[in-house]
Length: 468
Image (cartoon, rainbow, N blue to C red; front, side, top):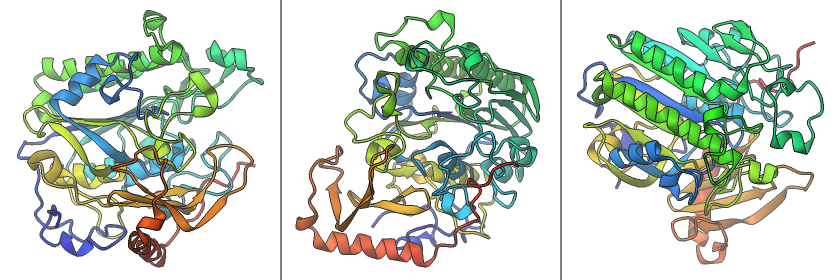
């Protein structure tokens, strides 16, 4: 039996989701006083796009070092395979279906969307405010561009970034050759400071560097306080941009240049923490919102040995390269247990001593026993949503696909009965259907699927509405 983070948590073992009725109990946590948190979230970075995760030509020495000093998680998932619902899952610790941040009509929010993350949701920033954290969001938000949905309305003291994807607000049809050598003026995206637009179109050739500069500025300004910084890069989402000093630096071409600039920024942030003597009191998490955008060929990334990419429910769409770093606190190593971005809210709250929301269903688990004590992860289930429906479900090493469909395209859905079944520890590339060998496993997964649906209360669709 897996060791649980809290004494009463064992009763949740058979549940498809964790209801946080345990927020007032004593859980395993860091002994560090007033720890800081930095979550670095990339956009469309593939499982195989970092040196430490196996890419042969993209050089990521800072992330490689970060992984060596901390924990590299090889089975870490996001809440959806596209931007908006994935980010909602990270911020709230809940599947996007619960907050209405997924839809079968529009897969993400657009500049003309009328909806966004509801005020009723509790973000990581809101939760940490209970312990007087200074909170800042830097980079891509994509949870609503109207004032009532911006980071400053969801617990963040400040915001600096582009409120949605960097390919939106196109001024004209962009041809393929222009994707290969894009210009910032092709995309009239706004750069915002809190609730005001300060630059339009945003100069995307310097955006990665400026996000890193802003993060370092925030660290320096709050070195005597406890802080939570959410750094969400707009890249390597297409269109790809990098600053002049990174042009031609990577053997992987433009895409590699972009990733290597992100890696350089990670190094600058880690060195700042070390210089200010904050490294031993700051947990840094690095991951991405979904897999590579494969329809753009070499302009997109790589899922490595995983099948599929952004937009789909095969592993490449939702399993992400993930690193936890906290020198002297986190037990170094490679973690092959299951984890997910939804686990960050209860984990950070537990470490900070902040109450975990207990008035709603949470889908996240406290991972602090894994991070600090080397115990097994409490997570054993992952739901693979596409829009408002579960297309696949992983329990332990097995993953069942009930519905399959290409990431993007006009092909019809294929419904599978019995579902396709893959043993992911033996077959991470999802090549070999073993459904006929494990009828008991399929029955168990179907039972988990039905239990999940029985207890599910969907939120009102926030993505379908448009501004008039």
